[in-house]
Length: 176
Image (cartoon, rainbow, N blue to C red):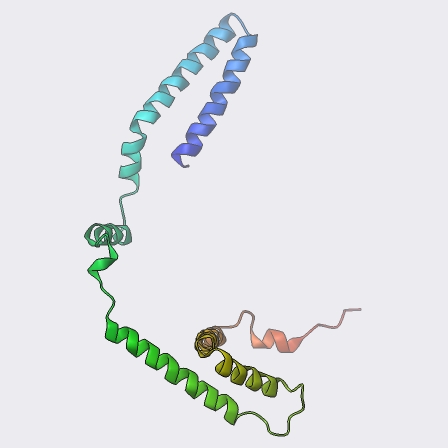
């Protein structure tokens, strides 16, 4: 049981015993007062020992130790790791090349005899319009689509809940 839960339960017990003691007198009152004094003493001892007991009960694990070590050794400002201009140029160039490559693949796979509401033709026209209107937005959009496709492949590779045999069996016929 957590220390804060135990102290909350103890506080409720003390409050209820105090209410009961207020209605009693004689030997019953004396016994309840003695019990209340013992609970108050236990509560006071628990308050003084709680930080020590908590630190002894849960020593930091290896992950917590590593996180503390990294937090103490990490620089406090971002100027310790300057952004490399060549890296920014490379990112821009790669993004442009990737967008152009994806655009060429999209145009190559567009059906020529598709109707006006064909989804592949509509997507191809939308991407071409984005390229003409806002190439920066097109690059950001294609990067987003890349990430979604990557996530879809990641999920597709995960084991499916429920076996194939269960899905093929279907519903059983009711027994008569």
